Length: 270
Image 1 (cartoon, rainbow, N blue to C red):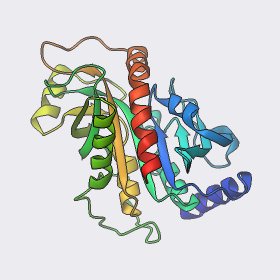
Image 2: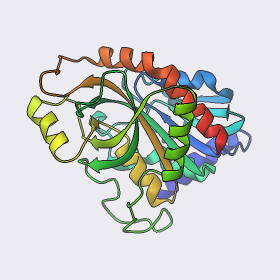
Image 3: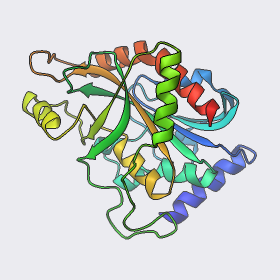
Image 4: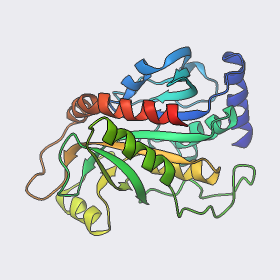
């Protein structure tokens, strides 16, 4: 796997003239519009990258964007890879590994998810301050020492200083934000009422099908992480509605301008 990561990174370095991004960004379902804010110098479809997975989910365009956001060099994934698509966990986190070898110093992640905290509303933005991993851990298997330690510390999965900056940016721009714990599940089914209750009982504020594996891989490699969710539907008793992927996309797209503003200013501040 390490050789594969290095081959992909070398291919991308050659394809972008040695462009060195400082921040890696993963754009979730319905949130790929942040790419419009990037002064794109190179856009490379996943299918054009040797040995790279290809996104199969609607709402994930499947491109790597190299350019400038807030005046800072970034690489952004327009679309990610999910365990439920049939990828191995190693492949799910492969892009994070590759971005590290391209030179990123931090990872920003976005996602669309369901809320299980009764204080939340559909359309809310939530800054992640912790997570609960109910995926198979992406670090299971033979450890590759060059990527990081066998037992990485996870006492601060989401960087406290980045969270504080994001909260300040939101306050200055009158954008209400929630802060909470994200529970990562495999999917692809949306949760039953009993599962929603379980997520809340174990300490979750929101539940989704991504982000956690990527953050685990990033933290193993020593990358500070920041993540934001759009609450696209509610999993609270009495407020549960039938939900489709298309509905999730519509709500995420409506919340996108506020999330984009926070992400752009946060990148610029680093």
